[in-house]
Image 1 (cartoon, one colour):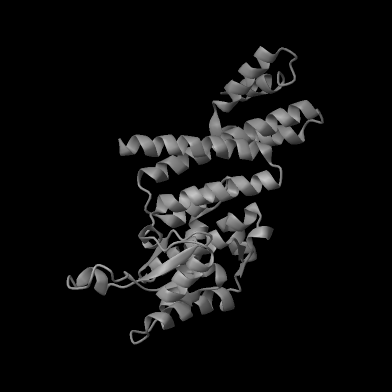
Image 2 (image 1 turned 90 degrees about the vertical axis):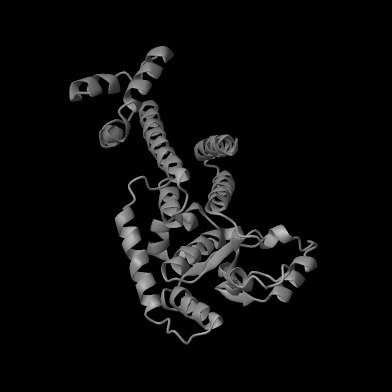
Length: 296
C-alpha cells in the first residue's frame, strides 16, 4: 500500500458513515505491523479524539494479532519456556528485543553454573541459585494482592527486578534447565512449586511405586525455600486439601501458558483495562479449542 493510499485512508477515519469507516479500518489492519510506525505518527499529528481512539485501536489490534500468531507458533512445539515469557511480554511491549533477553538469561545462567561445583549436594545447588537470584540480582517477589501486569513481563523484570510468584517459578525453571538441574513443576493448589527430581526413581526399576520422584520441593515465590514431602503434605492438609497423586505429577509448559493467561486476565480486569480483558478472553477460548482439536 503506497503512502498516498495510506494518507487517503487515514483522512477517512472520522467519516460519519460507519460502513466506510469499517472498510478503512479493515484495509489499514491488512498491512500488519509494517504500518504501525505510520499509524503511531498519525496519532501525534491530530487532535481529533475520535481519530486518535480509532488509530490506537487499530495499532492495538495489529499488535495483538501478531502476538497471537507468535503464541500459536510456540504452541506447535511448546518446549521453550523462555520464548513463552518473551511472547507474553509482547502484550505490553510488541517491540521487545528477544535477543537481548536471551543473552541476559544466558549470562545469568553462566554465572550460576560457574559456582556449581561437582561435590555440592542438591540443597546446596538450590542455595546457589537462590543466592544469585534473590541476593546478588536482588529480585523481589511481589505478593498476589500487589501484582501488576509488569510483574509478568520479562523485559520489565530485567529492568526493575520485580515479578509475580508465577513468573519467578517459570524463570526459576528456565535457569535450572540451562544449568543442568532437573526440576519440574507440580500443580499444588494455591502455590507455584517446583520439585527437585529424584533421578534414582527413573533409573532404578526396584524403587517402590509409592516412592516420590522428588527429593524435595522448592517455592520460588518464597525466595527459593525448600520443603520436604511431609512438610508439603502437612501444608496441604492444613489448608483442607487431600494429598492426591495428581498434585505431585509433573506439569507441562502448556500448564504455565494457561496460568499466565488466567492471571493476566484477572489483573487487567482489576485495573479496568477492558480491551485487553476482552482480547485475552478470546485468546483463551481460541487456545482451548486448539488444544481440544489436537487431542482428537
